[in-house]
Amino acid sequence: MNVLTDAAVEKALEQKMTEVDHKMIGQDVSVYYGEKRALFDVNLNVRKNTVTALIGPSGCGKSTFLRCLNRMNDTIDGCRVTGKITLDGLDIYDPSIDVVELRARVGMVFQKPNPFPKSIYENIAYGPRIHGLARSKADLDQIVESSLQKAGLWNEAKDRLQESGTGLSGGQQQRLCIARAIAVSPEVILMDEPCSALDPIATAKVEELIHELRTNFTIVIVTHSMQQAARVSQRTAMFHLGLLVEENDTDKMFTNPDDQRTQDYIMGRFG
Ligand SMILES: Nc1ncnc2c1ncn2[C@@H]1O[C@H](COP(=O)(O)OP(=O)(O)OP(=O)(O)O)[C@@H](O)[C@H]1O
Image (tube, rainbow, N blue to C red; front, side):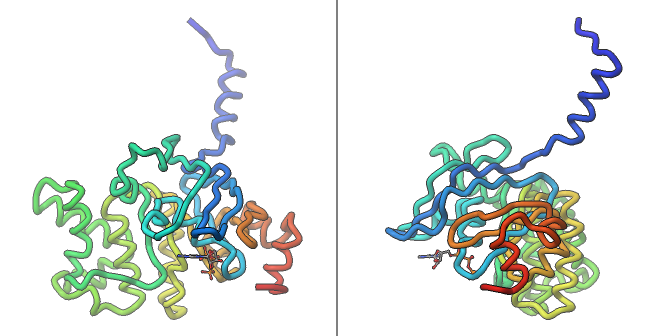
């Protein structure tokens, strides 16, 4: 039997504490839309229980990279992805992967709130029902309630569960979409400029929510707002002309970035 000395145990534990837990790993990821290449050999890892912000000037490839993480690019005609992306070590582009299941594990919230034209309850119950996550009506009620709780919408929605989701305010609709994403127990949530259609108060609520969600989920968010990236994320990745130019701790990125292009972008010199 191997007996570790106290010092060896300490060292192993220390190493474990400092070891970075990568939920998703992107290796040499390139994306082509027909002949046009939109991403060039991007190597970017997504840390577990961390909010990673993707920033950079318009057209630099942020959304393209985000969509690679749950194969949403598959839905775009002529789009081709090369390289490798793993989720907990599993190659998500392997032909054996069930894309519907992948998108349940890696959920997505879009720029414009897009609730289904159905009741608030149905918006949330739909996913768990098709994925067979509830054994009974009581189970489903429980999932609906806890998803709305986690999305910070329960108090506002509990007395109107049978009313249409589209009757909510824009900010409430976006939190409903977040609740809908949460309802299928994803591990990663991708957000593509989730606050761009919201007013400052609704934005603040969603940002607060993103902050809390980190305890249970891994989050990747595309944002045009430097302030938002600084407020909600712990890691930031800067893209420029299809290249990942820098990835760093958010604090460092906004105070002392390594790359001149990041410096120029955050100082508002281009983009
Ligand atoms: N469906 C598509 N078909 C063809 N080209 C596309 C498509 N989607 C994006 N592109 C191109 O790929 C490049 C990267 O676009 P992408 O939307 O990923 O950038 P972005 O950084 O998210 O931009 P923005 O901040 O303006 O949303 C751009 O040149 C864009 O024109």
